[in-house]
Image (cartoon, rainbow, N blue to C red):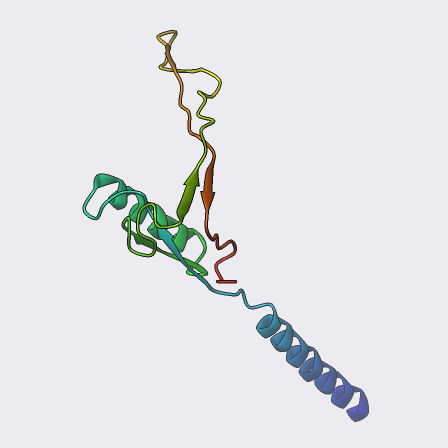
Length: 124
């Protein structure tokens, strides 16, 4: 009987140790992002982006923190654009409005070449 109790206690400790190791191994990673806006400091859009960042922080239980930066904080406007093509065209038209009160809208931009681009949060 003592052997059986000893084996059960040893098994409980082993399972407890394994689950503690798994919990540690499965701990969620934390991420910190910097997001540069196209809006200047003090603009209402910056406040909205900060609210969004706070909501994301709460919804992710602190695993994702986003720092909102005003325009020019990381890259100055037009610093990376080194060529503009002469192929400006309007995109397909759309509408803006609601409840049948749509107004035709459109936009367009020429092809732009940038000298460098970082994707994924690290410099190449």
